[in-house]
Length: 289
Picture 1 (cartoon, rainbow, N blue to C red):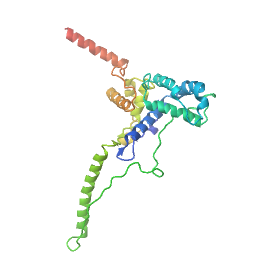
Picture 2 (cartoon, rainbow, N blue to C red; picture 1 turned 180 degrees about the horizontal axis):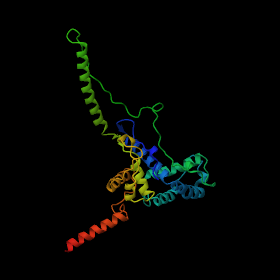
Picture 3 (cartoon, one colour; picture 1 turned 120 degrees about the vertical axis):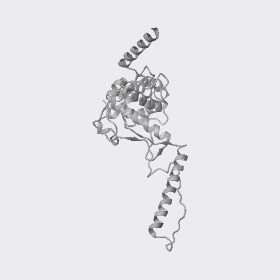
Picture 4 (spheres, rainbow, N blue to C red; picture 1 turned 135 degrees about the horizontal axis):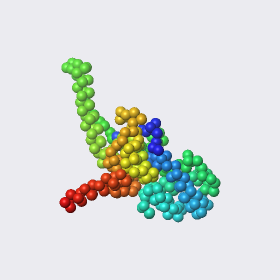
């Protein structure tokens, strides 16, 4: 089942108006895997069995504690695991998933999760994240802020009232500030991405439901999940949406995450295929007549 309404929040991949492309992509990757693990607990259970227990137990357990560990022998079994969950094709899964799987293995080892013992709880099987979050209190600034300077103003109290001077100066500053901010946004926009506030996490949930849970587009459209609270709807709102909107959102998120993008016929379920077949028959009759 999708996350509960209480967990639904608007998403913003940055605190400001713009965000670094690498940071935005890493946060999106982490969000998708978090949702996928919540939707399907068997995802990480199978990772523990098929990757950590089998391959690590057999080949790498003795070397995990060393300073330099060669995890390349695990690539094949990780690709196979990813392919089994529709997260890639043989040998063509996104690199970030392979890196995340290796990070998960190392985290298991750091937390003393042994492949020789029974499977731990789902909470301890969380997907590892290699994101090094920026801490403004301890880390140096990532980028130099753009300076904003205003022209100097004068006031002659013999010729102008205090109120008149305030209105004149504030009006000039307001116009200059608007112009400066627009210039900075345009210049920085060539380097960074706009930090769009997504509707909610449900677009990522749609992709996970379609790839991981193998749910057809029509079912997702019928029960799309609640939208963000700041859109004027209650958390209980779960109104059906158009199939094309779901397909478009899934394609966009999949493309952004470098995940397999379903082809047109791949996303058609039985109901849609029946309608498509009827359309083809009608077209054929018309053309034959």
